[in-house]
Amino acid sequence: MYISSNQLKPDIIIIGAGIIGLSIAYHILEADPKLSITILEKGNMLGLGSTGKGTGSIRYQFSSPLLRRLSLLSRDFFLNFESAFDTPIWYREKGCLMLAANEVLWNHLQLTTEQAVAECIPMKLLKQEELQKNFPYLQSGRFLGGTLCPWDAYADPYAVLAALFAAVRRKGAVVLFGQEATKIIINGDCIKGVETSQGTIWSPLIVNAAGPYAAQIAATVGIALPVQPFRRQVYVCTNPKDVPPANPLIMDLATGFYLHQEASGKTVLLGGTDKYTWPGFEEVVDKSLAEDFFTAAIEIIPSAINVKWLRTYTGICEQTPDFHPIIGKAPGLNGLFLANGLSGHGFMHAPAAGRIVADLILKGKIEQLDINLFHPDRFTEVCLPESYIF
Ligand SMILES: Cc1cc2nc3c(=O)[nH]c(=O)nc-3n(C[C@H](O)[C@H](O)[C@H](O)COP(=O)(O)OP(=O)(O)OC[C@H]3O[C@@H](n4cnc5c(N)ncnc54)[C@H](O)[C@@H]3O)c2cc1C
Image 1 (cartoon, rainbow, N blue to C red):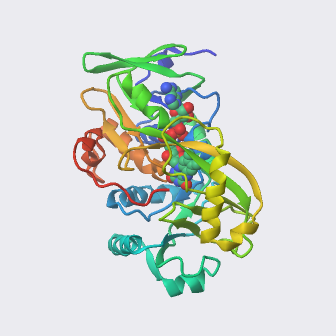
Image 2 (cartoon, helix red, strand yellow; image 1 turned 120 degrees about the horizontal axis):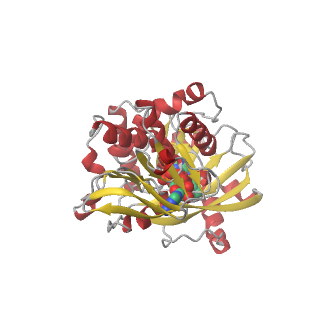
Image 3 (cartoon, protein in one colour; image 1 turned 180 degrees about the vertical axis):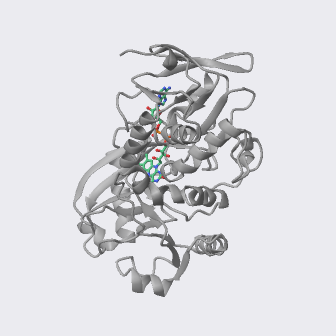
């Protein structure tokens, strides 16, 4: 493949062509089309990382005001995506039903609803009787209550990724597939470039958007990023017979179980009970988890006993200790930016992350929120983790 000198000395290098890397490239080039961007992607094609494995949920229901803020900042991007990019992404606002099986979680949901409504997010509390009336397929009496947010939505992550890929290439960005960044090169506290599996590329500005691999590349310049990879297992099954089509996404806060109905209404993606596993990059399906998983599923939706289990796949999710992302300038180095540890919310928060990093690079600041809250050094202090973990 011919590589021009512009590609070997671009204004900006982005490591990783997942949803985060491409969103950053898109937002930078929207604001300043003259900049040259080279994106390094170690995979041989698009979508082999976390983004291609995601189940595509977009939600506003978080216990953390900061995560809700990222969802709000991303909202217009998703709402306008199909017309702006002239591409279908199967965006539909089908809502998400969060369920509380004990007092602590029920109190949490009530507090979150109060806060979310004050932020103009249309989140609604459903008491036990309302739940039973509206969602009769749930195990009777198991849940004290739940919340529903009609803005919660679904979009196809691969369709969004592919549209962003096409858009950034049209805007002049170069995406080098099969090219792994192996080491960031510095001189003193300044960024100089990246050593890759196929040679060196020079640039004073680098963005680490390497998803689950972010800590590995950060370690090459002595930065210990608290971002760990976790395997997530997704079970593809036929729809439980009494769950109607166009049902909201269902999430049980106690077990992590979720049921995500696909557009056809005939199949569902189930998962979420494996949230307390060991970190690692292993992607092989662990069949031993299935028994516990289906036991939990049947306790929540009894008719799940009759679903046909079609297949299982896994993906790697990148997580920080407080389930909030790390976004901003890397500590102690000029020219290195981080957009990492999106913690299971990277698809829905990619528009906000892209815009924030673009603003930081181009304007040196952002106006929409306090960027210090996403700084990697926050882990040395007491921090409040997000509690809705899936
Ligand atoms: C099963 C599952 C379900 C999920 N469901 C949802 C959901 O419903 N909603 C939601 O918002 N989020 C969801 N997520 C999380 C979401 O998919 C991720 O947060 C998001 O995709 C992260 O995007 P990324 O660009 O950071 O990572 P990735 O998509 O992994 O992209 C990073 C890219 O960097 C490349 N790379 C890594 N290291 C290097 C290197 N050294 N050199 C060059 N390239 C490199 C990788 O090959 C990869 O392509 C889910 C995740 C999983 C696994």
